[in-house]
Structures are given as structure tokens and as C-alpha cells.
Length: 385
Ligand SMILES: NC(=O)c1ccc[n+]([C@@H]2O[C@H](COP(=O)([O-])OP(=O)(O)OC[C@H]3O[C@@H](n4cnc5c(N)ncnc54)[C@H](O)[C@@H]3O)[C@@H](O)[C@H]2O)c1
Ligand SMILES: [Zn+2]
Image (cartoon, rainbow, N blue to C red; front, side, top):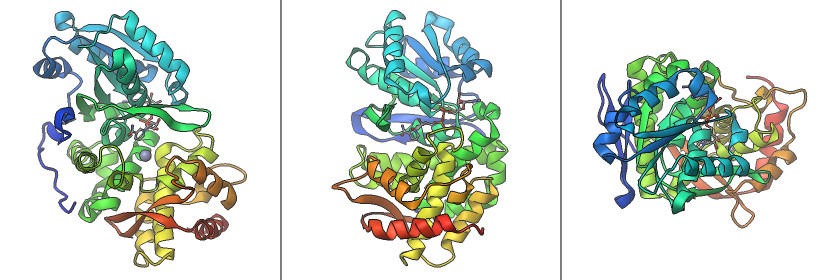
């Protein structure tokens, strides 16, 4: 995990292969991919017909029309299903309705379901594809930065229940991912920054030189500078692809991708999975907490956590529990309770991703809950930057 230069890209489209034997696929990254989708799908899947699943924001921004137009020649498109935007769409009720509508459109075993949207659409449409007719192929067309660098790659699909997020789902790898960097032009800046937290995560967990590159180029990435964006997305996807190829079903190494997520999920749950705190914002705070905790436990050199927080703050991401909006914040016991409910708990012990340095994360299952609670109580009490 030491190289920081993306394998293949210039001004055009780069390809990152995800090597999973018979389930291998390519992630294409670059401008203009939505408009080229017809030819790209034809080259790979011949005459297969398809159905698009998306949400209303992709309709309003014109991305759906562009994709539908690209797929119209040859009558390849059976139809498009437009759902409500937002996390609430990842539900059993929406899944049932979506499966029925896909069947009504006549989707057959050899067809492709195309998920056009952010992680919500990707997770839901991917899960529908996993169960529809006992499994049909699907193509991810991620349109948020988070979905391009994270949720569209790796085959985790699923929905939420009142018991928690993503507790029902399936591993079902896509057959192709088209990450059109032009689609990010219409993404609200706040969503862009939230997705950036996952980009920074890759540097922090396994590639210090990529993190250093991000420190110098974050402005370009967030301004949608084409070269900077392609490089950031490509390196992120390369790292995810390498880790997923080695540990598809998250028995060990894939857990590294959860850097910042044990703390982050607890904060998200505390905020009620609302617009008060977007996933990536919770992860930014979670990453800072993971580095501060690593420093407090003397795993990682003094000053590392401050460098991480300074970078995330420079892209307008929150870095402290006290940055979560609201009159009263969570207390340490609330957060510990929420962490215990998280699905990463094994035998009642908390699993954490900690760090020995920038670019050197490791999985620890031996973290003492009392130490974490004391640490969180101190974090909640502090207000200074
Ligand atoms: N499967 C995985 O491995 C994985 C990994 C990380 C996150 N996730 C899941 O991803 C979800 C979050 O994904 P997300 O952050 O993409 O959220 P999202 O899908 O809710 O998208 C965020 C918002 O941006 C809008 N949007 C999407 N693309 C747009 C565009 N190009 N222009 C304008 N608006 C656009 C959406 O309509 C939505 O309102 C969560 O449900 C999370 O659990 C899954
Ligand atoms: Zn995440």
C-alpha cells in the first residue's frame, strides 16, 4: 500500500480492475461516462436490456435524461424508476416496491439493473438486483463523491431497519462501475465535503504519500478540478479494490475501511441519521477521535491527530463531538451504548481501527471500553480547537 500515483489516467478515463475471480469487474473513472454508457455497456454486455433505478435529484439535475438518452438506441432501456431521495428510501417497504416495479418493467435474468445515484440508490438497487429472480447483474453509476470512492465498489448492498443501518443485505458485486466525475458538478458542496472524508480515510489508513498529496490538493478536488478529482477518486478506488480483493467478505483486512466508523456510526445514530450530521461528517469526527485515541494510547506519535484534524477542518469538515449541532451533545455512556449496538461488535468487545501513524492503520479487538468511555468524556468536555 505504498504507491500513491494512480495506475492509469491522464486527461481521459482511467480503469481500476477489481480482481475477484469470476466476480471481477472494472471501475471506470473520468468525465463523460454517463453519455458514453450505451457504447460501454454494449461493449461488455452485448444486447442485454436494462432498467434504471435513481432518485428525484438525479432527474432534476438532468443526469437521468442523459443516461436514458445514452441507452435508448437499440431499445436497450426497459424503463426508469425514480425514488425519493434520502436515507429513508433504504427500507423494506421501498425494496418491496422496487422489486415489483422491476418485475413489471419485465426485467429478466440476463438484464442489467443500473443504479444511478448516491450510496442510497446503489445500496438499495444493488440489494434488489441480488434478490430479484435470485440475482441479476447490476451496474453502478455513482453520482456522489462518497459513492464514487466507496459505496459503489466492493459489493456490499442492503437496507436499514428500525434496529439499525445496513443490518439486512447481501454481498453482490456489480458487473461494472461508471464513475463519471462530471456528475459531481451538480453535487451540493456539503455532500462533496462529506464524501471527501472517505477520500482522506484512504490516505490515513494506508497511504501516507496520498494523504500528503491531498493536503496540497484538497482545494482542487473540492473545486471539481478535473485532474485533481480523477486522481483522488482513482487512488481511493485502487485502495478499496486492493483491500476488497484480499478480503471480500470482511473477515479481517477489509475492516480497515472502517477507520473512523465505530465512533462515527455512534455519532450518526445519536443524531438520528438526520441531515444534522451527514455520514461523511460523522466519519470526519470519527477519524479524528480514532487518531486522538491512538495518540492517547501511545500507539501513534504526538501531533499526528492535530495534523489530521487540521486537514479535515481545512475542507470545512467537523472534527470534534462539540461540532455536532444541537443544544446538548451526547454523553460518553450514550456513545458507548450505541457502539455496542453497532454490528462490528464481536463477543461483546468493541472493534476499533486505530493508527500507528498516518497511513498505518490497524484493527484492534482488544480495546477496553472503560478507556474509551474515559477518553470520550474528556473529548466531550473539551471545547478548544
Ligand atoms: N455499500 C457500501 O459499501 C457503502 C459504503 C459507504 C456508504 N454506504 C451507504 O451510502 C449511503 C450514503 O451515500 P451518499 O452519501 O451518496 O448519500 P445519498 O445517496 O443519500 O446522496 C446524497 C444526496 O445527494 C443527492 N445526489 C446524488 N448525486 C447527485 C448529483 N450528482 N447532483 C446533485 N445531487 C445528487 C442525492 O439525491 C441525495 O439527496 C448510506 O446509506 C450508506 O450506508 C454504503
Ligand atoms: Zn463510510
